[in-house]
Length: 451
Picture 1 (cartoon, rainbow, N blue to C red):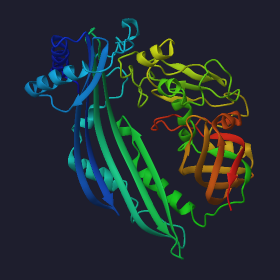
Picture 2 (cartoon, helix red, strand yellow; picture 1 turned 60 degrees about the horizontal axis):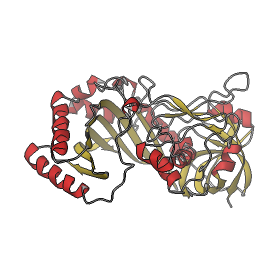
Picture 3 (cartoon, rainbow, N blue to C red; picture 1 turned 90 degrees about the vertical axis):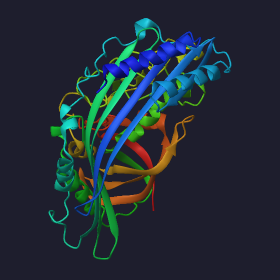
């Protein structure tokens, strides 16, 4: 938890920076503690504890700017570090656009770190023996039945719980705190068939609340996924309806968010340059940012500058509604600043009402009738300047709304703008533990290359 001593340290850092001649300063403290128990084939493999702490200094002096970081918090060596940092900042090229955000944009309602409702006091009370118990309880080794002819080769699991603190202060009186706990379990299972062919499956779950983590379910899902890969092969290339599972659908949203970033836009490295206010995507495509949704894992009341976040549309009914511009990038582009980046993105279901709404993956498959269900992406990339992409995939062929055979060794290719114009349905099954709340998605006429 963030303490009065932490705040006193950052105030001292700011005062020391100003005493060296700087006009303004911002100081950020990031601290985390993670406890982890790894298992191998149903037995404890390793137990680790990781503590990390960093102090970042941003110095504004004579229209110059410097950013520096250290993990030292003792005042004597820290004072020496600050003196050297200020002297180095003085050597930078002048840049009058470097400045603190306007006071009216800064968050004033994140003073305890608990406002987002993401701290569970139970994390700091978990005993080492309890962590071991949770990790072993989640193992499926010796507990699960396998399909005939399948053998469980290996099971690698990791249980962890962590506490993360973030404190941002500046020389104009800003004080922003955020504290978040996390309870996580992930497992990878490898099986083999009678011919010795190996297949793997992975599952993961996370929550800021101790009682919301279902670790044993991860083991069951990973085993089911591994066994379902049996006899997977490529299909003939061509255009297919593509359904993308909610576990991996965020992969197709990330390039859009990157392209709306001020850094990409200002450097001419964005395929969405000039898109603000333009309708570029399908009518029902609505993407919102929910940084202030109480209790939503990953939500946060402020960005790295201390600017207040807000719940707002990013893309609404296919129209681009906002760029992500921090104070500096907004100045460079002569535009109004927003926030530095998206915080907790959610894709809204589409259609959002009526008898055609598919609430989950199974319903969406039934609606689409036939095509390819993508359950994982295996490498590939998206060109940030053009939006052209190529991704390896694995998944399942589905017919009459039911999966009929596993698929791998195929690529999807195309352009992000075109792909999202072909988007025609989204379920309502986003996993709350993922950084982006993207449900199962459906696209028309996607190019697949295969056998």
